[in-house]
Length: 154
Image 1 (cartoon, rainbow, N blue to C red):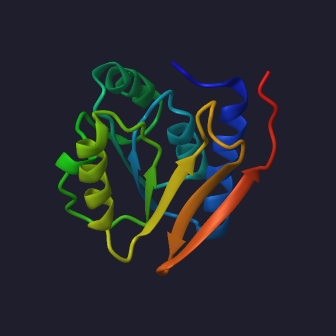
Image 2: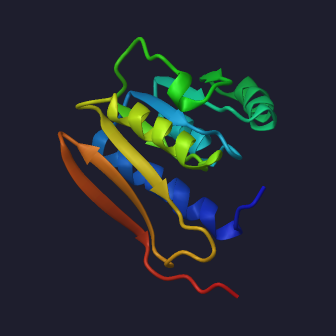
């Protein structure tokens, strides 16, 4: 995994803050990764939790994780998923792979969730500006929650 130790606190704080303010009951989570956000959603009491994870290794880890939790985990790319329900929150924490074509497919998938709340976890890569935030949409208004404003990379 290419993650930094400090990211877990930043990322889980974002979930806690979103949940504290909006009390989402259903979440469509895009990407499992190491399960930090999935675990935090479960701790916060989300009732319906669907996770889309296209990477086979991460998917298998998610299945193992799910033995202690209650989520629906699907081994699929976001743009291949056909939702049959409306979610209170679409939470996007994926790493874009496959270049511009897959990025455009994912972007169009996100646009298909009109009038639904959307949050993008935006912990930047090592060479990106050192600001940690999540963007989310509530009632067609965009918000940015700053979680950590500075961090020194050694």
